[in-house]
Length: 264
Picture 1 (tube, rainbow, N blue to C red):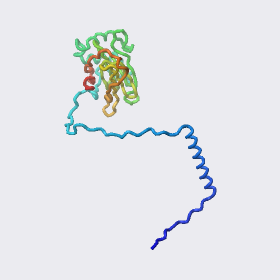
Picture 2: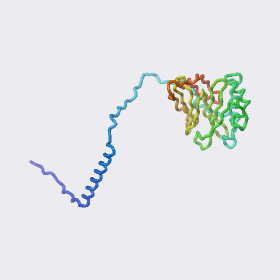
Picture 3: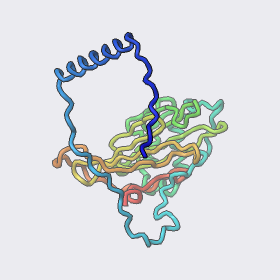
Picture 4: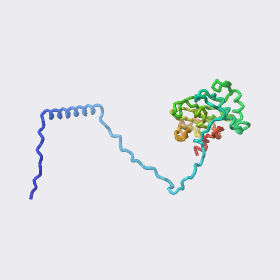
């Protein structure tokens, strides 16, 4: 027994609509033809298949504590320095370095950096720490690194004897000067980018350098070491002078990262 199929009556098509459709088809044909004149699309080849990483040693017992303490969240108020009105630009950079030296006598009084302490006598107030040619304090730079709308201070000074440069970042909290980052190394360049401090240091490998990036972290209220990498900077024949071993920071907070620790 055959079963008849229900067929709905066709909706009448208006001539104007048909004309419009024909016009669109003609227009598309002309566009496609024009594109073909300028050069046809070509395939880029097969797409590589994504491969998930292989997890090694799945039975390895997770570490219970960090292997190295690089002090990335250590912050401390700088003793003897006040910031009336909260304007960090009123703080004398030379006085800040002198406060650090006073807080770490073992490192500066006949210690690792005794030459730095002696050369501080060549520094003067109000001249950016460069009153004398032997002054180890470098020019201070100001930028809002913490995002609170107020300038913070990035300060550098030479650690002598040796070829190290100490880099410090300070902010102001309740009219008190607070160190939020401290690091020292055989520094070749320092940059400020956004809320980050980027430090470049020579590598023992010819044609490469270390690049460390410290970025403000609102939760920890400190500058954290967020990136530590080795980058190619030139040909294999480009060589750096021997790079001395960096020592822990002689800062009130002890917040230096030892390069040997962070790169093992």
